[in-house]
Every structure is written in structure tokens, then in C-alpha cells.
Image (cartoon, rainbow, N blue to C red; front, side, top):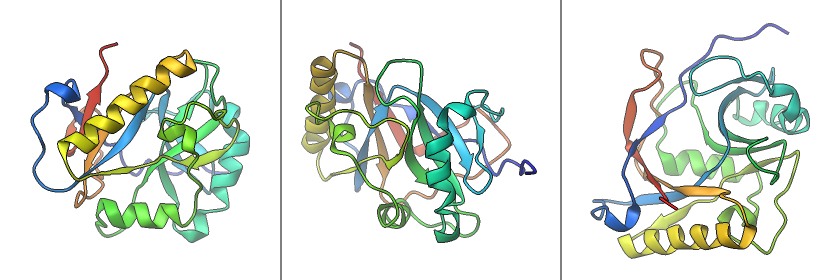
Length: 207
């Protein structure tokens, strides 16, 4: 099968530092877990995977079952998927693709609309929401959870929950949270591999 042309570089959140030291954000935002994996942009009909620099991912064969699951969703609108690929950095969830977002081929649907579409197609597993009592699924495709951060305190509570889950799991499985503005489009662009998108803000743990 022919390799398609890359549609965009994966969106890069700007750095926000530790969440507990960050000022409250204006407007409505959502919080997603920042997972310890490899960023991957996927063309689901062909199973082609690129890394965050726009190069073909050399470990694509490790994700064949997950890629096959995503390929079935191409006709439902999930043609280009922005994912976190779980493999090799730890022993949790090897071969699983966690879908972070869908890249629109036309139009500029906002974050909440994109999430609603993805939620109709993919399951969310509670372990990615910080439930360390559950095993991390391997060799599958799942949707990353999201939390409506109606206040800074809500976001901080989720941030701390993920930090606590790391201690229970015994691994740095979560690296922090990515905050996404509710009305943010997906920033489709091919002019820069490193350009940050201010509609998304990454808050990492220091420990």
C-alpha cells in the first residue's frame, strides 16, 4: 500500500511548568493525562505511523493489532489520529495506541466536537484516568480520558491523582497533564516541527 503524504506535524503544547505554580487559565479548559510514551501520528486506513518530527516510526510493527483496530474506524471519520504509542519505555500497556485527538481533513471543529466524535468510536479505560488498581491494556486502541477543568482546583486534583497513580504503579507512567482549551481547533501545519500551540499547555511533574 502506498504511503500517504503527511497531513500535519503533531500539535505541540506550550510548556506551562508545574501546574501548582501556574496561574489559573481563563475560559473553559479540559485536562488530559500526559502519558510516558512515543508521540505518533497515524493514517488509519494504511497503518502508516510518523513520529513528532514527521519521520516514519520504525517500531510500527509493534502496534499491528492496535493499528488494525483503528483501520476499522477510517470510514467513521477517524482517518488521521494523533496518538501516544506505549512501547519500550516501561512494561505497561505495550503495543497500545492511546488516541489523543483526531486531525480533521477539512474544516476546523473545536476540541469538544472532536472529543464527542472520538468518544462515539473508542473506549476509555479507567487506568488512564489514574485508576492504578486496574491492569494497563496491551495491544489495543483506546481513547485518552479528559476532565472538564471548570476551576484551577479541579485541574490540580486530577494532576495529583495521576501523580499518586505513578506511585501505586511503581513507574512514571504519567508525566503530568495537557490542558486543552475547549474551543481550540487542531493546528494543522507543515511549516514547523517545533512550533508550540497556545491552545494546549503541558504541565509536567518534576518528580
